[in-house]
Length: 310
Image (cartoon, rainbow, N blue to C red; front, side, top):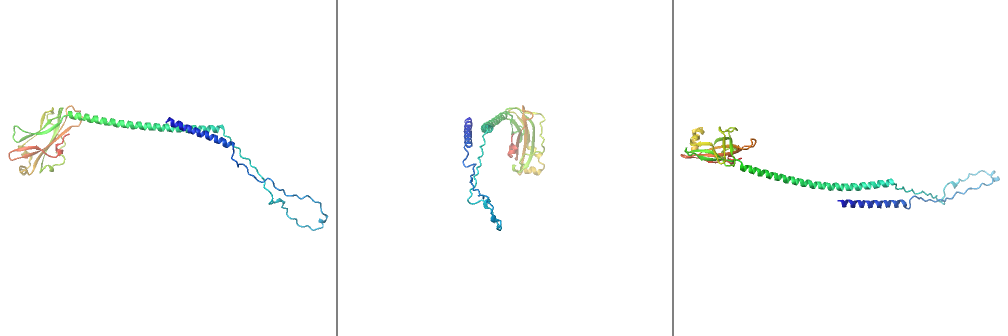
């Protein structure tokens, strides 16, 4: 960068010295052919007639008209005058003009150097800004990876409630929907919700689970599940089928397997040590009640939205 500036300064200085020498030579040797206009200096003067003596006979003779005097008009043999116009004196190159020219040259050189320095500075700033942007992007990626890692660690240590169906050991054709903590920390059940639907098959169910009310049923006694512990969420038996059927015709259609009974619900819980502002977790479940002639069953069924976990 400095070499370029010095080279440009040397070239400009040489051009300035050359122009000064050319101007001085032009002032000391004027261009030939300027300042003179030649014309013929000699001109023939018209002859003058010397006065003659009066002729006595002229008085007696009648006056004749005199011919015009042609001496006042130019003749062909007359030569033009030579007029010499002095050449204009060369204007001297004053010291003030020299100082002004030199100052302008210095300003041009300084402006060129300043422009080159400014361009170099802008290039450096551009390179640094790009490096800063790359470093910021790398830092953001690292922070995102660290956040995902921390979230994975927290998810691994959080409670996970999974729902299962357990047959009752005491009552025949009776079942219990239970929630078991398969996580690594205690869980507290906040509320539950459940619903019964009659449909020909699971394709007749709504796309998302529907409940009669958005309000959850909070347990009468707080339920806290340590890792590995279970709690009963929904009991169901063969005798409960009659209570949910609104008519004998519907009951017969279920016994003839014309209509199926779907029981679905959800469990809302949070970690025992989780902060209050943290969102709760949810486990949804859906079962199909199989009504046989003598035996009954309760198995998991339904679309994916009815068996989701958060």
